[in-house]
Length: 226
View (cartoon, rainbow, N blue to C red):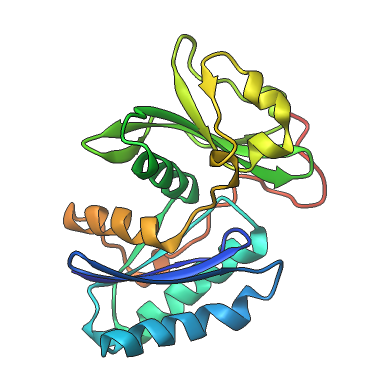
């Protein structure tokens, strides 16, 4: 499996190249201008591995939710590279990638609530559970005001993501444990690559035209009324 992964959904701009069990990465945080940095990261990874795009199995990308501009950038870049090299694509949820990062940090965690600041007084959120070491969705992904976050009753979950730092009331949700370090976690191409490889092995390879962003929110002009 030779897989390139991209992620620009948050301020963390990252790329990863998975070569079997070997993982090469590049990442840096930028307030803006991800388009100027992501392609040089890709070029550097391919040069380090001595590979061209055509030698890859697939291209994965963080499909969102996240910044509208950033999610659109990763999807369009993945689609363009895939069309040019005649490769399939693998979209991966940025919330799932963040859950995977958290699970990898602490092997004792079995369930997680991921909350990412969506701006406009809203959060992107979803619950995940560990299955054979992998972060698996335990429900749909949502966007809404902090008070709309409703983790499963009676569940014990670790809280990951900047939504907890932006809206401290979320730390008080029943059954939620949040370490300050977990609030600083952001999705990365490293976890996206690993999740995508698992999806690809299960037959989840898609045509380049399926490289589409997932926003959850239909408007950037104002918060939803729900």
